[in-house]
Picture 1: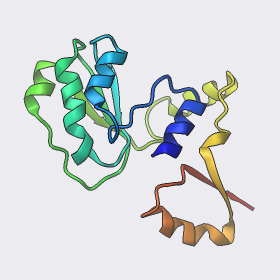
Picture 2 (picture 1 turned 90 degrees about the vertical axis):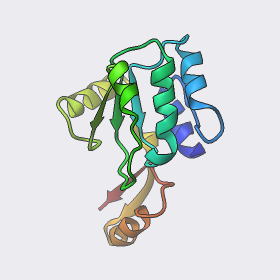
Picture 3 (picture 1 turned 90 degrees about the horizontal axis):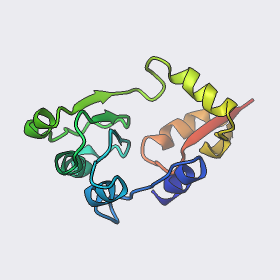
Length: 150
């Protein structure tokens, strides 16, 4: 979404690619001078829509050993082309957002070095508003981080 793209730029993303508005693989290859990326994050929750573009960028790029990290939750099946991952020695891993070795120390280090994470808090609610917001989060993806104040 446009709002999340703006948040990404605000907290330091060098490039934002909206795969609904531009050719993802072409932009990745353009930005990297034809290499492709070392790391791809599937954060859309729409792997059935974006996976072919990720594979194209891996296949057409010169980079080997790329990793695709699935960070968005989705019950959609991912249409993986084994040849792309075998020939390019790429891998697919899953991440639960906050899990993984070293995640919290890296976030703390980033904040200590000046990264302002507060723009990610897009809504503040009271404890009484928690149940209705949990229901909203199932279908409304406009909020990035909701903080409960009490």
